[in-house]
Length: 454
Image (cartoon, rainbow, N blue to C red):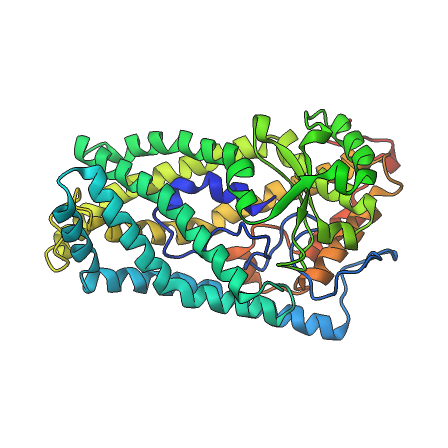
């Protein structure tokens, strides 16, 4: 499933975890996590070519020795970087509290205006930019790793401009959320965790709805697929009809990504009227039409199986727990260290960094559970992709295996990932497992039918 919608659904909690995470990837570059998204998704060490990379029969996930070493090295670097990012994020928050940077920003905001909204406009951007600048070295290092392994081909000027745009978007969204948070805290010191949770839910859905129209075009070029690649329209329309989804050709798009990444991807984004199919130009260059159809079928499965709504509900419950735990512990934290940090109380803007610290720890501890839930959904989507393309393409299992082999080759997916890495950070099953499933899932050979597509 595309990471974009997950990040948007998690908008409320990222208010409290932005110090630990790089900017949401809207640029088309491959994500920094070692696991991947759709079957034809994200990253390549191979040149974009007109001929598809995988057309041979796949019996298991294998890589030649040189690619195996690169894939294993990259996975090891990404695993270490994820752990370092978490620890470094907590250090950044501690430094902000210890150096009383938030106190300075609060004082400036209060001198600027007595109105809380105007104070938020001063305080929130200053704090957000401080955290962004502290964590910028990790962002730069992550991009350097992607360039080293041939995944990112984006120039530093273009990357920097995307980073700036990410920060500007974050400033707008998070400033509003921070203002709402402290408005609720002042109105209801005992129930703020519940009321802010309620307020955040429609905001998450709204951002998810408008992102394909407002946010994504800021980072990549989109054009109607029927103008750029009309040959893909017929098989994708057939897929949409079989999935019983309402996505007309007018909502199928080509996305230009080759200037920034060698990644391949095909995804479904948005909800309701904003729902659309997007195929990257790099995917069209490297994958066969059946492989692209399978990739879109996988993504379609998330919508047909109601994974989007289920995940919103799952994370909503998780965030409610986070906010409640934050409410229960923040009083003790402020009683213990609040005086040293010059925090006047929970309704003081400066308390935000302490609250972020607590909820970031909660988020990291629950990460394995959230990722296990995501891996389950991704497995279901893999299965749905096989079922919905069965009969449309000869040997849908082999096509699915080829799509994942392509994914592994271009993204340097580790054939032998660290189990701890999988447990902590993989939100998709390892590629070897996904290929094995594609090759062995065949209920039709025994006279049966698919579980999701009859």
